Image (cartoon, rainbow, N blue to C red; front, side, top):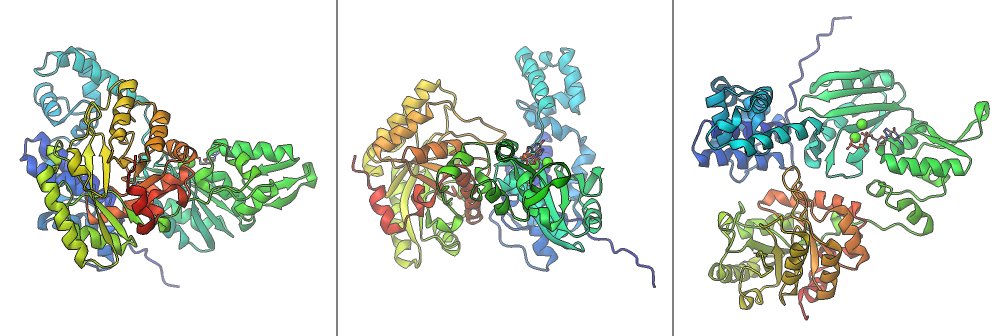
Length: 588
Ligand code: DGT
Ligand code: CA
Ligand code: CA
């Protein structure tokens, strides 16, 4: 037998890794005081690549060309190739030689932008979080020009919050790591199934860690393949049937290996949530049964007999329940509901017939109207509303009445030559501080739909914020409230308002609420989706696409809608265009 020399496997690189490198380049360039357009190009590229639906490195590895991505010119394209094949960027390494690497971490501290970081570095030689804490504690920061005592206190507060925070990963980012690792494990000898359980399977917007479940005759080969995975930075623990690792990106992954007979019970257990599991376990106990990750058992001591466990459905059936979709397993009444009658038939991506919110080059999008229409059509959509920003949003090239009327003519012309998809004329009009809309009535009245959105004054007192939203909806042409709470993950909390009142007002005025599918928004939140459903207000699951690739984000919106118990009939854009038109016509 000849000796086997293991072939080095190239380190897998994911879009998130490429995005992180671009983001870091942007940060360092900004600290160096580089041209703002150059900095912006890297930031935009980071966002586009990070949220791009397909794994770029995997495409290249298969010898395919990179798809044309808006905003990615020749130079960035070359850098993507370099990072995808080597995991590194020579340009970033050069920047690192010019500036300490730990300095980028300072930028992630709320309140510290590149200017402040540069000042701290230039004047106090602060180049790490530890230095920053020491400088703030010893009162040196307050004396720097542009800082002051208040800033110093904010820095100390932010550092305290940071110490208590554990990092969570957004769903699309977690998806790339999870799917690649699951695929890798499926190649292990004797493995029949690998599933991703935990909060990921419940479609939470972020995950704390990944929980993988493998079903195998023998745990050895799959365990070895797991701990030996190229992206593993550290093995935290390793036993015969369980192991935990941390990937290079900082994401923790737990693996459990079970036998075929326990597959369903283990999948239910590791899907959670914890609170749902507790409800199930109590229910089992009340029926004289025992439930754990190996199965459902009757009897005690030496006379235990397994009555279920190979499938999830068998576990739920043993407890007198129908199978409950993972998205509902949050102990929000799903078990009682399942006991009394049928659970909702949750909406799927295939139910979406169109999309009511997107941007083109006319405002801050990257593609033309026609490109957006064709991309939406290619993803199975039959209608698409073009909804640019309105004039107040100058940064986003918002449209004034003249430009909007011109665009409406353009849409008519394009519609004449489009097949398979119809464009609707809309606008994402700004809701001003007092609830007035940013464009005149006679212009809004000519559109197929009017989406209203808050883009400023997020922190009004709750009563004023509520009044502002109600007033906007009172407008005769108002159709849909975009990303209602305006929260952005890691950036902005939901606005304070009386949301039940807002939802009931939407019902009374015949308007609708949006669930924006952008992975950092996913707004309306799941719990409010459910209230909207109960109050009889339809929710539109929109992409808010700014480029042709963003239509893929609808998947994340659908996940959130499912967590909100929405069925197809609760969703505005599950209607065909013929069904939709009368719903958009406001008669109030
Ligand atoms: P995460 O990771 O914070 O996004 O949330 P999960 O739900 O993925 O939580 P995780 O990873 O701690 O555990 C995965 C599942 O395993 C969890 O949803 C339920 C189950 N589980 C883990 N530990 C316990 C436990 O001590 N009791 C019960 N009942 N279930 C547990
Ligand atoms: Ca987890
Ligand atoms: Ca876990």
